[in-house]
Length: 320
Image 1 (tube, rainbow, N blue to C red):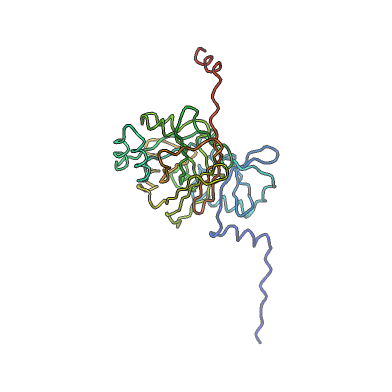
Image 2: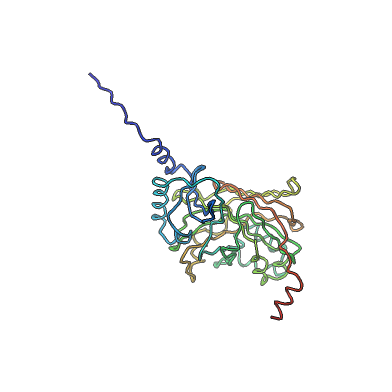
């Protein structure tokens, strides 16, 4: 006689968490502020955020990729979801830094040649062995989804630059991916390439998506990138590209960035843009920039002018 055995009932919470830990579920590491004002680190899966027992995101990035995966899995399996009403923050803190690569796409090279009075430098760096790398932002200058991005008050031509960014731990391992909007003052950099720090680094010039997706070893390198610019609810500019058009390998960019620099709490490297508007186009206050990257979601930021300092205040700073 055949006896049919019943499968033991599994706890519904365990079934849910087993599904969440599965590789088919995207896991996004986030910083968030709780209702009582505390800033915590967590992993977001579907519509739930599970706290991770670390003080800072930089502290998490001091661990190896394997250990980060273990910590994240344990947080999902053993932790309780965060209460509702949290505010997502930029995924950068502590001693982390945001760096960026330039002229990594042919479209970027062509646009820089068109705008610059010194076109040859961009043609040379596009094919050079050494890439263009520059510091973009300290954690406290970074904004995230729905925050306001600034254009400089002394620049006439300004554009957003949609970029695929990688999150790198202290050991130099790529542990995650996110979206970066690398705002750029084209009229300033175009006047002289030595003005690049002023064109790139200023208040609210860098936006990162509100978290980063954990990297899998079998991730496909080809991701579509789309940017839309809305003005008074009308689409005024649209562009698309793909990470497959990158001139340089991303691991090589990471290696170059770390060649003579230590990042004890990791860093974020934005890998450059293949989407650049025509030279006559500039974003204006009130515009809304929407960036989408396959598998990473979307990053949305309204545009405003960086407020000018009062003349009296500026004079006092000079004479003090």
